[in-house]
Image (tube, rainbow, N blue to C red):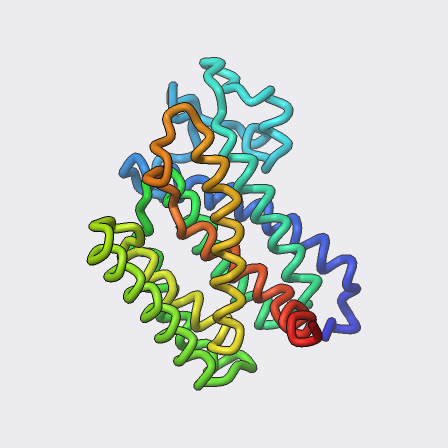
Length: 260
């Protein structure tokens, strides 16, 4: 429930702004992990020429537009990932604010959204889901019944079954086709995702992830450098997407499916 002293529209707007600002930090985390730099120092700068960014060059999304997607100093192209991460972070913060209001539940999910956004964009670039993100996410997700209105059995069984299913799939691919189609990072990620959605909603989460991955895989295979069915597509981002959709609208979707 929304706090009567805090208008829902104000909280939603504040969540959007906060999400956009956090998205700027998530970009730093993604880029610096990929290049092996600290997220603490140096300060915000152009990756190409080292130009130190002024405050107005750090405004989420808006700076990208004002600068024409180019560095003010060297005129190098600014990667599309920067506004994409900021927009996604802002939109997700807004959607979860509308769903859960100014509650502890919203704050906890915000922490997970940050982890999953950073992990997803690292996976898209490098096909790696870093342990420094997946293990803390698993520990945090498994502890949610301590401070959120979720069931212990749903949480634990969702985590174990989610990771177990993907472990079995990985081994099946290795035995039948000799392909490591699912990395261990996906299995570790499922420890947290399964815990968050719970056992009951786990099949729906996997279905949504698989459908979204299938759509993108078809597009991937149309590229000139594609290798047909052996074209590699990172699955981590789609698992995160399936979990987010399930947390937001999973109960409604399940009710519709049961209704049919």
